[in-house]
Length: 188
Image (cartoon, rainbow, N blue to C red; front, top):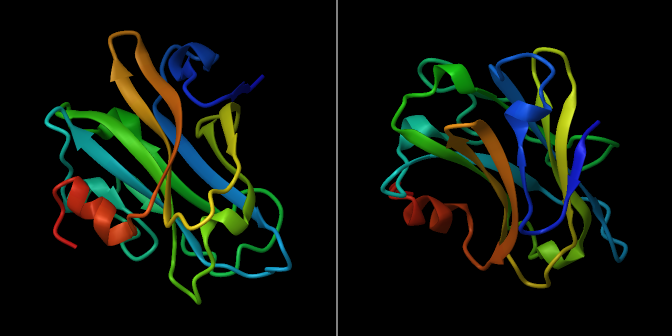
C-alpha cells in the first residue's frame, strides 16, 4: 500500500518494497489545470546529486535529453498539454546502476514559458514512486499550486545506509529549468 506523504515527511522506499532490494523506480508526475486553463506544458526533470550538491550532464534527465549514456535514467517524453488521467510525465531511474558518488536524486516540475501560465494554475500536482520490478506504488506526494512560481521541487530520493528514502519537499521557486540547472552546477 503506498504511503501518502505531506510536506516534510520521509518514507523508506526500500522497506516499502516486498523484495529485498529496490533495483529501479519509476517517477511519475501528474497535474490538473484550474481556472479555465485547459492546456499547459509542464516538465518533469531529475537531477542526480553528489555529496557536494552538484550534478552534471550525465546526471540530469528531462524530456529533451531522454537517455543518458548508460541508460541509468530514461525520460518517456514530453506531454505538452497535460491532458489525461494518471502520470503526465514519467522518468525511470535504475538505482542499482548509479555511481556510488550520487547521494540523492531531486525531482522537479517546471513550466515551459508558454504564455505565462503560472504553477498557481496547477491543481493536484503529484509525484509518485513505483517499484519498476512489479509496478507497486511505494509513495505519493500531492501539492497545490503557487501563483507565479516557475518551478516546484517535489522531493528528493536519498541514498542511506538503510536503503533509498523519499522526502516530500514541495518547494516552489521563481527559477526556471535553466536556473535550476545552474543551481546544481550545470551550464544552461
